[in-house]
Image 1 (cartoon, rainbow, N blue to C red):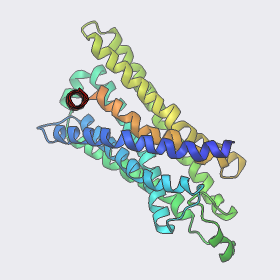
Image 2 (image 1 turned 180 degrees about the vertical axis):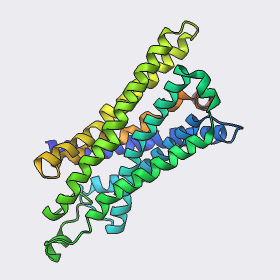
Image 3 (image 1 turned 60 degrees about the vertical axis):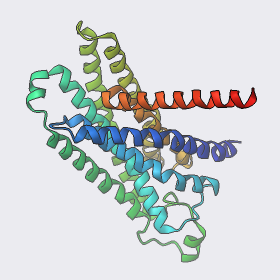
Length: 308
């Protein structure tokens, strides 16, 4: 029963994430690209643009994860695509954590230290932060991929019969993989989560106690915080907890594959963060919604005329 739910649930969640996440992130990408090209953009749009790219990286690799799920989580596409897909997919997940933390720091500095923030608001800081984050995550995640190709005592025939992608490690490989996964959980999940919670706790307190802040802006601030916390606790949390459990149990947990469901949902939740954070994205989303409503009204009118 659990196996059938997993086999049906994962492809469904991957498909829904791809269906809704891809157009929303492409729309946000266009809005942020236009915002970054304007004179003297703030660091926040640069970080939001990088977060959009991380989401698109994850989303574009979801079709390969769907193929894997359709084959009962055995990988039929070869070793090279296995390494590239796993590398990009999990880099996209973990890259989002520190980008979200960077955005929370920007939001907190903007309301807590407005004068200093305006004086130091240079786009180069956002570019440096984004590049450093991408280098950090690509470097960290590459260790797990490399570990799959470390020499082992496993026979060639056994290795050929095992076609699970980046999750079927030998005892020798687990001695490298499990400590690295624990370090990934601490450095790429726990620390940015603590930074984000602290910054947004202070951010919300300041926003709610400022009488000159309008009601809509307050609700957007609360929505931004809630969606970000949802990402950390629900989308990233289960996958990171599997690292800790695997380290203490000295094995790769069998239920790790199910953590791909909430992780993929992250790419659908981030557009809400973009909507709450950026007036350019709100304008782009509202314009597209108006076009869809107009198109729906035209289609309804055409159908009524045909059936009249």
